[in-house]
Image 1 (cartoon, rainbow, N blue to C red):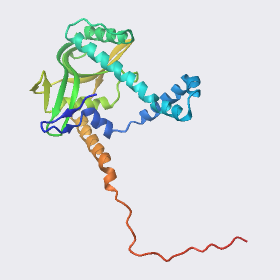
Image 2: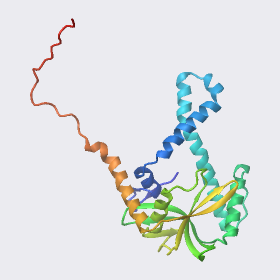
Image 3: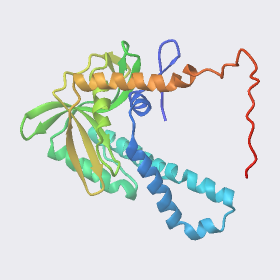
Image 4: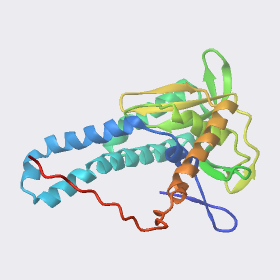
Length: 253
């Protein structure tokens, strides 16, 4: 739960907001339906004791409860990861202990050397902001020591294509904000997603170049159109005259 403001105090859209508003997500429709159905089956007896209106409200909120649990898990893993990257010991609840252990193994196996952790990105030209997870030196088997821009994901579904737009937005921002100071973006060589799970961690390469940055800007325009699309349709136009036409129905034989 965060947002960005410019120097005049006006809200600035975040990168994930631009993507969410402008990129269709058909998979979410199936996820929403399946999550609601699974909740109904798992809580059938409990739901049967509720009044119909309460039962409906509980089912309508089921998908948000699942989403909120995932978001909280992601936030806790992010915080633990930030401490790990800073070289601190961490204590975490048992439900995310596997995630944190997986991430620690990733840091060790790829010899990750952080440059910037959890930093903001600003585009003055295109009017957006965002928060990147990690810019770091990473030991890659085929490319050696490489500077990468990385995004941490803890969802069960892994890395989606929209991550390319997200990383491109961070990569081609005008400025990065590190410890409250604006700096030039680092000239990263590669981008990727870190899929952290309770049973392991994968480094997934993601193409986030200039073409993907243009796609992000297109998505932003689509989102802007959707936001103003209702204003493009006016009220009904009243006729200039009153019709005298009447339809006469013949009785059925």
